[in-house]
Structures are given as C-alpha cells and as structure tokens.
Length: 117
Image 1 (cartoon, rainbow, N blue to C red):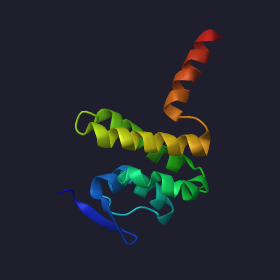
Image 2 (cartoon, helix red, strand yellow; image 1 turned 180 degrees about the vertical axis):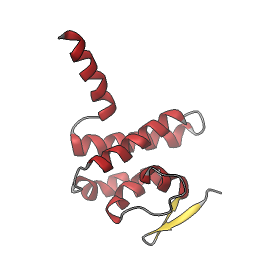
Image 3 (spheres, one colour; image 1 turned 30 degrees about the vertical axis):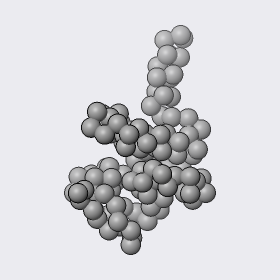
Image 4 (cartoon, rainbow, N blue to C red; image 1 turned 120 degrees about the horizontal axis):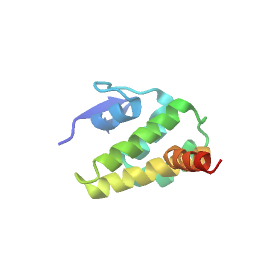
C-alpha cells in the first residue's frame, strides 16, 4: 500500500505531494495547488477539476510543478505504464490549458529557431 498523507482534509499519495512540492519529505502543499495535486494523484478526476484548474493563476511555481510531473512520469513509465501515462496526460493538459504550450516542447523549438538565425 502506498504511503498516504492528509493534505487540507484529503488523502493523497506521499510521493505525489513531494513531486508537486518539489521536495522530498514534504507532507503539505499550498491550498492553491489542491486541484493540481488531486488531478495528478487521481487522473480520472481531471475532467471534474477543469473549471478549478482553468481559473488558477498561471505562475512559474505551478508550471515547474507540472514539468516535474511530466519528467517524473517519463522517467518512471516502465514501473507502471498505465498510471504514468495518465499522469503525463493530466500534467500536459493542465499546462496547455494554462499556458497554451508545453515548456519542454517550447525549449526544443526555441533551440531550433536559434540554429536558423
């Protein structure tokens, strides 16, 4: 059974909380990150969280949390393919909703554009 922690009255996997917070050993995140935490911990809830997520203020801190999830999912895809594919999709969907593009993809395009100049 996964290590569970309570965050603002809801139970989440400890690893997911650490991933969103960006630090090992963390057992809490800012309340404003709850919809993202819930969507990553339980990707099947994403459709029901879209209104809340869409109304979130896009901050660098939030975007970095979503990028961490994407990187973590890609690195651990071999452990649980289904779970990590869902988490990756959820994180990418949230980032595209809030910023219109993926930071990891944007970095590739910017490098290619530099080479053309």
